[in-house]
Amino acid sequence: MESLKLDHIRQDVRKTIEPYLKRLLGIHKENIISIILYGSATGEFYIPKESDINLMVIFKDLEFQQLKASLKLINQGIIKKITAPLFLSLSHIETSKDVFPIEFLEIKENHLILYGRDLFSDMQIDQTYIRLFCEREIKGKLIRIREAYLEVGLKRKGLEALMKESMYSLMPIFRALIRLKDQRPDVHKEVILTTVGDLYGLDKNVFIAILKDKMNDEKIAGQDVEISFEKYIDQIKHLALIVDKL
Image 1 (cartoon, rainbow, N blue to C red):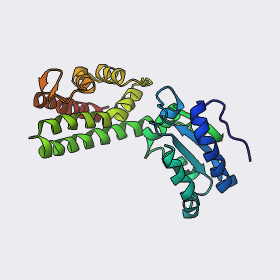
Image 2: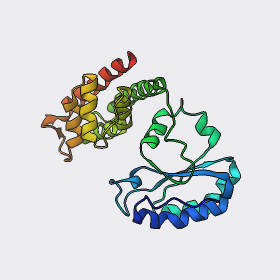
Image 3: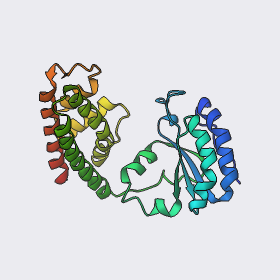
Image 4: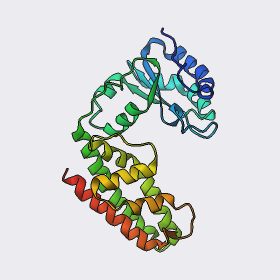
């Protein structure tokens, strides 16, 4: 069995995951093809004792017995902020690029190999899959935002919270839209919003005002929350029409 590759990760993260990974390999041995670290723990945005540590484990064969054998270790890891890893089989990855194009792209752009083969660096994902993902997600978000408005529209703070929560959930879609223009998205949210606005002819200030609103004052950029919401939902509707024609 080959050794772990931990020299290139943060010392605090390494201290947390090294014994965990050794036990994981001890349980599954040669059935593990690779172990990948992804998310904030790979870089500067990791906050010790606050950020989660995200792992992906790729198996040759993945059955119920592998899940059951891992239960005790996984539960112990959760206490140390190691979230339950993504357990995937090699065949699942090879046949799912059309289903999870954005998830795989996010990992491809931000991952570190801790053990075994790197299956993501050379992964190619068809742009068609990305466009379809964006169209489906934007139109789905639009439906859910309208539905949520009907539920909370009479509650001012609820409406402000709806805008903030829904816009944050749109961030992976915005990053994907930037990739559709053959650009790599920035890590900072305001830059992402500015770039999407410029690339797709949106009023980026609508989104940036929501991002910057840290006070629960029922105003975003000095406007009544309902005025802000109307502008926000109009921009999402406009974006849905644009992506439909890409």
